[in-house]
Length: 286
Image (cartoon, rainbow, N blue to C red; front, side, top):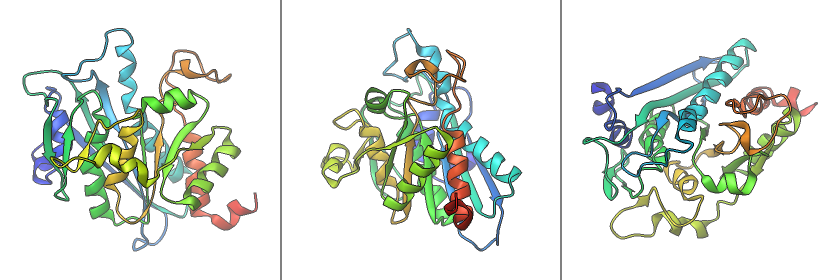
C-alpha cells in the first residue's frame, strides 16, 4: 500500500481504504517482439467484491458482485494465451485489485479526489466505484508504458445490460479501425461485440460542472463508461463493458456455458483481437 501511495494513485486508494483487505496493483508484461516496440496496454478492473460501499447494494443478488473482477480475469487469461501462442507483440497489463466495502474509512458520496494528471473526480455514488478504481491506474499505466493502444475491460454500465443483455459485449472506442478489428474478432469467435456511441454531446453528462472536472455518476445509465473515456489521451482506445456478458449467465443463454456460473466472456474475442494486431497479414487472409 505504501508503494501505491508513493505513486499517488489516489482514486484507487480512495475506494480501497474502506476494506481491511489491502489493495494490490498487479502489473504483467509479455514481450513477444523487440523490447523497444510500443506495447498494447490492457487494464482489467479487479474489484474482488463490490458491496456498493456507503451506497450499499440490495442484499438480493449482492453475492454476484464477487464477479466484479471479471475484467481482471479476462485480461490475465488473454495474456496467458498470448504467451502460449507466442504472439509477436508486446503486451502490458495493469490490474487494480481491491474491495469496495462500507466502513468508517469508506469514501463518502460527494468526496472529490485529485488524479495524477491534476484533474478532479467527484465520487457522487460509491456504488459506481469501478471507474474510480480504474482512473489513476489507467493514467499511471499510460505514463509508464507509453502504449500504442489501450484496451480496458470492466463491468461498469447497467445501461449496457439493459441494451444488450448477454448477447454482446458493449464497446466504446475512439478508433473506427480498432472497432472493426474487435467486430471481426467477435464474428470469428462467436462472442460478439456491439459498438456504442461516444459522441462529444455526451461529455456534458460527466464533465459539466464548475466544482469538479469529472463525475463518476453523471446523467444516464452509461455515464461510468463515458467517464472512462476522459482518462485516455490521444491514443487508440477501447473500453469493453462486460457487465452483461462477463458475470452470471442469466442475461442470455449460451448453450455451452453452465447456468448461474461466471462466464469468462469475452476472453476468446480479446485473444483473437490480439492475434489480429500481432499478425495483421495472416489475420487478413482468414
